[in-house]
Amino acid sequence: MPEQNTSESIFGQMNAFGHQKIVFCNDPDSGLKAIIAIHDTTLGPALGGTRMWAYKTEADALNDVLRLSKSMTYKAAVAGLNLGGGKAVIIGDARKDKTEALLRKFGRFIKNLNGEFITAEDVGTNPRDMEFIRMETQYVMGVPETIGGSGDPSPITAQGVFMGIKAAVKELYGNDTLAGRSVVVQGIGHVGENLTRLLRDENAMVYVSDINEERTVQVAKKYGAKAVSNNTIFDIDADIYSPCALGATINEQTINKLKFAIIAGSANNQLEDEYIHGRMLLEQGVLFAPDYVINAGGVINCYSELMGFSKKRTLQLTENIYEATRNVLKLSKAENISTIEAANKIAEKRISDIKKVKSTY
Ligand code: NAD
Image (cartoon, rainbow, N blue to C red; front, top):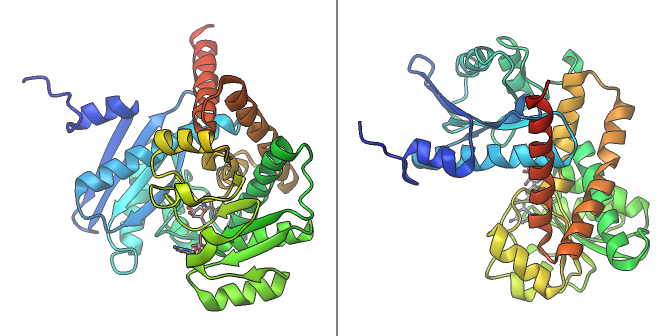
């Protein structure tokens, strides 16, 4: 058989992203069509959420799972966790196609991996779905607290983002006090609302914005923040922009409009193009706290559940995000590279160091 290792072939894509294993899960009876991607297990079992999404094509689903699982490897590495990176996608509409049978069948595929992959909730899945998966396998985190899980990770994620914001403020202004600093929080969902509370507790001036205008007004009132319209946020003169809604908000259309000194939020993949926009922010003197470094609270929460850590230990690990962010920002400055390149370098070094440790007796 001729060797086919182009960027379109599956093995070619695995090589390009550096993946170890892909599992295609197919079950016509329940309608399950899922892909589990295990990127790298040097540091520990691959942990990552299961996303359910109505992908237009199977190629789109594969591309998404490869991209997301790789970023989980980097997130766990920088957070100092003994976890590798993985992710799963279920192809389908979460509102119509999700059934107990489908989720339990998916759980059996995870069970057969014997702990090499551990999952949790993501877009299109929720703690109730994790309960169905748990009926078939123990390798699922983020189940409700009532059945021994760690519950909603959002308050922990918000705490981590808050530590990341403080680290960036320290880098830029010499101290990390937030009183008097102004922050635009875009997306007042689970993470955004908790973050707003933490910022207001430190007397930061907070602007909140969401596509759900009613909710924006409610949250603003509850915490003493200022409600702003979503399409005017780039006109606001604030110190910090905290994207907590969707990714790719730093793109060709927005990057030249930015007036903020710092970007630090929970949304995944905030830069439309990691390399190009990371460099542009460096040149513009905008301090970008890399998303996967400061939004690691969710994965820390799952790791704690896996290890049986107390809430206190979970919080300690989350507070380490301050130091992790400081290290990234220092390396970026020392080597004049973008902050995302600095974070990637730190992640890759830890993985390669531990690989050597594990290869010796
Ligand atoms: P969520 O769905 O609870 O909240 C998202 C909010 O953003 C919603 O209120 C929604 O109305 C709003 N929104 C959607 N599109 C918007 C737009 N274009 N402009 C303004 N607001 C918009 O989600 P969440 O759990 O709070 O997560 C927020 C982000 O953080 C997501 O990107 C998620 O992937 C990421 N993240 C979350 C966690 C976690 O623990 N929840 C962990 C890591 C990363």
